[in-house]
Length: 408
Image (cartoon, rainbow, N blue to C red; front, side, top):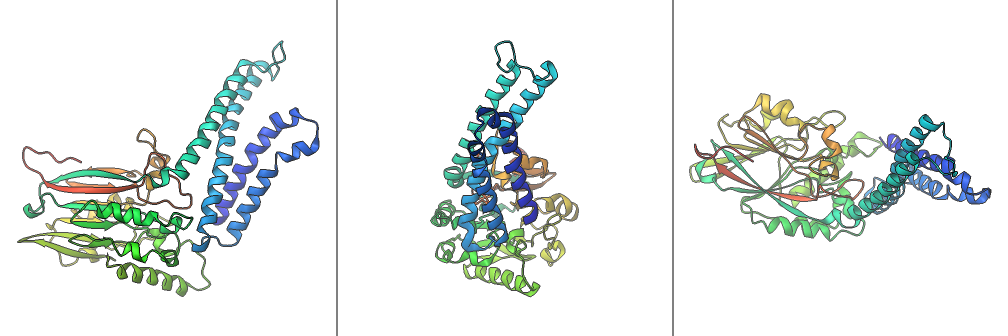
């Protein structure tokens, strides 16, 4: 995985720089040393990338350097890549129409100039977007209110409120944003919900990322408790260990810490919440994703001892689990997931991640079963958010009647 990331970084660094050099820089000056200056930022970023990846900078104490590097890299490369694509289109049209010749006044043809201007505008926009998402969007926390109607919701739970949050990725906060953990906790507690459900990815890579956050996470509370499941990042799958036993020990340490906060960690388990004679099931499976993500969910074990008619809220980190197993194997009414982050980028309801996941943001229904995919409250690798703001989902359960169609 790290090798693929390094190759992508090198590609995004080299190709736009070579294009701009060949088309523009070499024609602007004959001074070799001035030409070489163009490549200095490229070399510096490439060296930084190699150092970060080769030194195993997934470690918690290096999260700040990774975050800063990702900002510099994207703010530097994304604008140039966009300019290259647009300007390249103009240059291509020019070659097809004129054979690459300039007009009588010695200027490039109109196609080159139009696409060059568009490319420059998009480059400036990309720089502004990356900068805004890094410095402002990453902690622009929002509360997303949702109401779901179910015909079989027990009467005593009509109006029951759940606060869902997901993908905290707390290691990313170790770049000077440690106080954001308290902001998240305070925002969730301020919703005064009956229960709080965390749908996985508490850390990026290792349990040690939680050092210094115990006081904040321990303050999370709700009348019916705080519940959590494991996400793919919580299995320490992105770190190389000399022995597999060391990985297992770190996962166990993470689980111990979660429980020490007073959270109910559900590993293919369930809990029953009662209101008089009525009951509601809160269940949680271990991460169950498509390769290369762990597939450890066990629905029969999770629901063991329960009647099929029980009203159940299931936490499953990966939303692909819903269509793969939950719908065909169960009648679980509400499934809560995360994982996708909505790509941490969304415009007009669209994100690139929509081409990867069928269900990737918000609520989806199939018959009487509903899936809600949280956009998440944190960020992984690059602390950036635009459009897909970090969110807390406040879900109100309502009992459907003949005059009240199921909706979300």
